[in-house]
Image (cartoon, rainbow over all chains, first blue to last red):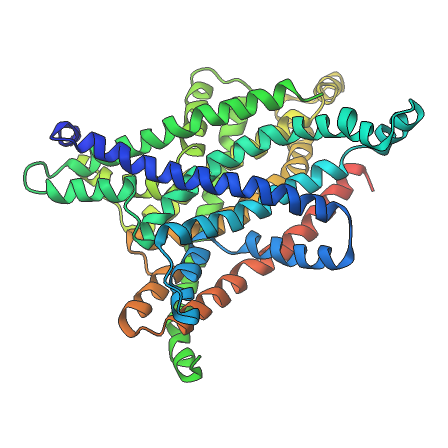
Length: 222
Length: 219
């Protein structure tokens, strides 16, 4: 079945190191996306016409362009058009942050605009000042809505980073291919075992995070 | 950018475009069928099958399409299931999409209030009538936004087909860059064709979404 290949030498360790590369890229991108996304989301909720138009175009680009196309544009396009030689990993982080920021900003904007006006009115009638209203009433509600969704973004980011092998980053899939190639003679069936293990590794990485996000969403629903 | 190069590339891109669209939509229809069936099984708690369905949803929602395709295309032949790249493309997309569509349909089913079922039964509707005429129409109009988001997501996911050497848009672009080094032209056409493929869907999608929202409000 091809599982024996993974027990040879340090193949399993290499595979895990490959997964670590994907996880690193996704965590860096998520961190950048959350920071930029929150800022952009707040700007979008201000309903300034210029910001609205620009952000609409930006969100639509992200909505319809596959991440893979963006990856190619940034990785191959910048070299040709601007003469900048980006490292593959930098290109990946740029693309995934570009994508994640849009997703995050849309969520923040939605959460901000979904706070009913009555919440603000009640706070004023209770004698809270503007700062207190935000500190004790609005922000806690927004955070409760945002946390499950941002956690969810992490799993989507991890899944999307599997694309980086297409621009030559050696991550878990690429390592898997290398192991299969190297053992072509000794165990011709290696592809089954190796790809099944990679499939399960991704599942083990993403599933607990998905569950956590779902749990928090349920718990904080009201 | 060189216009002659662009013009000479266009026929290749058109061919790749039709292949991508074909596999994409085949996959989406498969995903809708799988999703509806799985959501049905889970919502009505059909024994045994609902357990399998939940495992299926969790497995496919938490792994990338690229890994699923690699497993189906390169892994499964080693244990005796060989399928062509094209079949692998839409089966893979259908399986991934099915797990997402199932969630959309399921939340639709859940949004139909219990009183609807009770009233329908009190009015003497049969189980079949209850499902087809009462629950399904309401559930679907509730799941429309989720389904449309999934359609766009799945059409975007078609870009990974090039990894199993399907001659799709991505593959064509990569191939041309590798052969002739006309990177700018190849990437430009790639973007144009993806816009042609997805912008109409995105626009029609938001239009349908508005219609569906009206219907649930009873306007």
